[in-house]
Length: 317
Image (cartoon, rainbow, N blue to C red; front, side, top):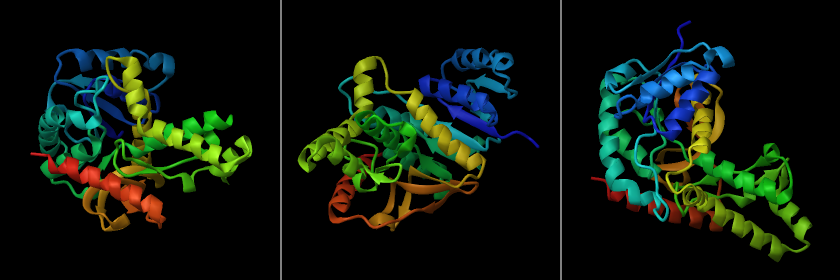
């Protein structure tokens, strides 16, 4: 059986880590594209030379030519400027729109049957732009944000309660920005509601709420926290790993329920926009949006988040 072909557009930090993860897990042959000459070639050569140590058998190719992504099963777009300290994701829209326009044309020309996973910021607008230019059916274009945001939320809860991160189930909805919606009501540790455990730890509901509010706020600003510490770029290990979960679910038809930025056609009261919601990902890409009832407070937060997405998308040229 022929191996799958995975194209990574953007050979920066996320692209490099993704190339390594795809190779180590033998998910398919990897093509790493970047406009900087020599950089994707060097990274792929470096990773390929670890093959004998790690024991993986896949082909890795670095390129500056879009033609090399021809026939890709999945294209992952990481291209674009990363944030600098003090910048919001939305500040990147002008420059990254220009980059995304070129990338989407390249995908449309050379990988017209591929699934596309977008990581570039501002995420909700970049997914929208990619779909508009490629004209791909919406089940084949997906943004990565919710898995990472949910993982950050789960990590903060695990650290606060002194439990394994494996046993925390958490989910965020909405746009990938400061108005994202961490769903406290659906967050649990081994099935036990998280607020129950926080109230037990602190002995009162008010303190438990104060601690949870701080974790929600930290989740919303988690990307900026990493940017401020790094000073020269943004997070890359965590977005790469989160994207890998999506890639694996599509390539292996796992049908995992993952929060992803997908096109909504009336679900959660949203029509015609790409927004983060729980999604079944399988061999057909976005196979289903998992809809459920939000309470009044959650719906108000979701509406605010969607309004921010609409405003951002409205600025696209």
